Structure formats: C-alpha cells, structure tokens
Length: 90
Image (cartoon, rainbow, N blue to C red):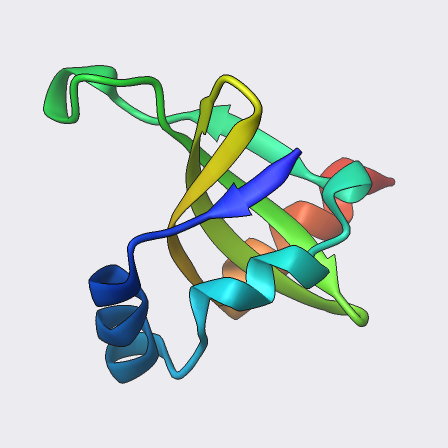
C-alpha cells in the first residue's frame, strides 16, 4: 500500500513532534496494533496505531483510501503506550 500525506500537515508534524510523516514508510506495518478512532469527528474511518521503526515504537494516526494509506500524524509513543504495545504483542 502506498503512503501519502499532506505536505502542510507534514511541516506541522515536524514542528510539533520532530518527526516527518514520511517516516511512516519505515514503520513495520506487519507489527501494527491499531484501533478505530471516533469517525464522527472526521467524516472518515481513522485509526490510531502503534508500530516500531527500528525497535522504537511510534504512534501513527492514519486512514485508508483505496490503495493509499494517508498519514495524519506520527510521533514517538510515550512510555505508557510502549508498555501497552509490548503487553499486547506478547
């Protein structure tokens, strides 16, 4: 699946989280744990997921559009999220 994102959103994400949305290409998507986000706020099905990039867990918000996965946000997962990810992967 192709990865896509809004360049303006990428600039905002870099400023806020210090991570480019382009880094989502490096996520280990086969290790993804995702839950649906509330669709009433956005008008489309969004997911909040956790997956590693080189053994560091990241939080990714995305939506799937036909053959494209649109990245909305990407940041390093906090300690609580990393622990939850590790428990659920075991």
